[in-house]
Length: 332
Image (cartoon, rainbow, N blue to C red; front, side, top):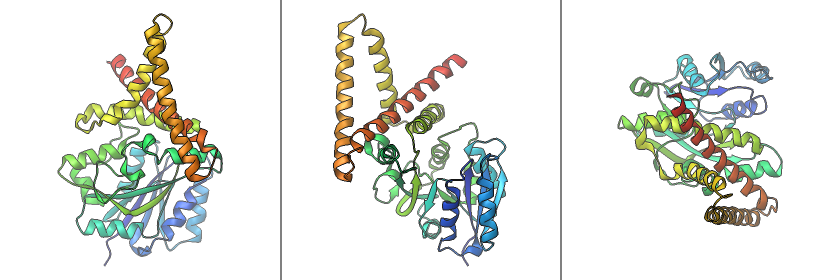
């Protein structure tokens, strides 16, 4: 008999995408009577709960439960969902995601085969709206200049990795390494996987496990997202220094160097020269990537949109990282 599976989903004001997720879960090839969905909702103020309720009425064959996330943070939502879940296997998804029909089947098969303690797959990033800037954001979220070596956003081979975005694991793993750290309001998946790897267990990425992820539709929302990523990445690195990767220091160093050269430029010609060289080189790289993307995708707007999106990611992530460092020092 198939093991029971609990799909855990953090959620807040997701009326635009939650039905797509539920329909995708309903389309899973895994037996519905061995599967449940636990949505941990942060007391949504839009129509999210009404959409979920309508789905529950229309499809009683799939168990869908809502639990309240009073803290309104993602790690608290995940822990609340885990506490309410009854499954032997936990599959973490997101309200912005649409898993392929064989997603749960492949996760369960990999876990039962003992390939990894936490198993996940790759994202196919799609635009969160039908606008040229939303398409550019989606392209940036899957571009090496935007995401570095985050394999789950690229085209990887199967193997052990640092982290996976939507992991699946046996409930016993929570007993072994603990739940999600509620003191971190972002980077909770990476931090969880750092503990998994520290325990000598394997985090495994299988590119056959696939889901569609809808990126942020505007540059403003993208900036907020990456500011949060950068801010909480520093807080996490203070606890897990061994997880530091050289690429993670590039955005804050870049932002810091621009700020320093801009401050010195009015008084020193050398600073103006270095600032001009740094900015022109950076912009040339971004616009070359934008032109290449525009040609490859046959979308001229990408020539400007991709540099704007990648630049937003770099500056927001770097500024958030630096602010986290400075605010930490000031707090101490």
